[in-house]
Image 1 (tube, rainbow, N blue to C red):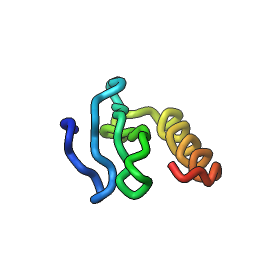
Image 2: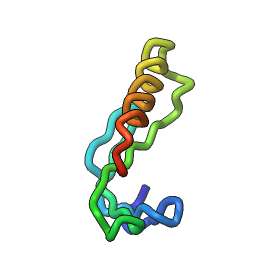
Image 3: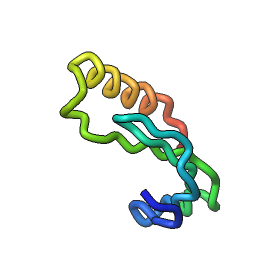
Image 4: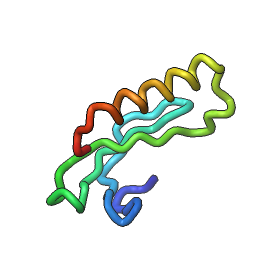
Length: 71
């Protein structure tokens, strides 16, 4: 994702933070929260991951969802 791209009419990418074969993270501004900074995680082709790694990603998503944090 290129800097300045806006995702979901909300998150404006500022710069990439990290990259691995199966995910990338970006620093972004949340236009629905007064341009507060946040991190966007992009998952790439989960079909190539082992079953254990897919389970780990799903568990991470569930934990983050349960935090009920605005970001």
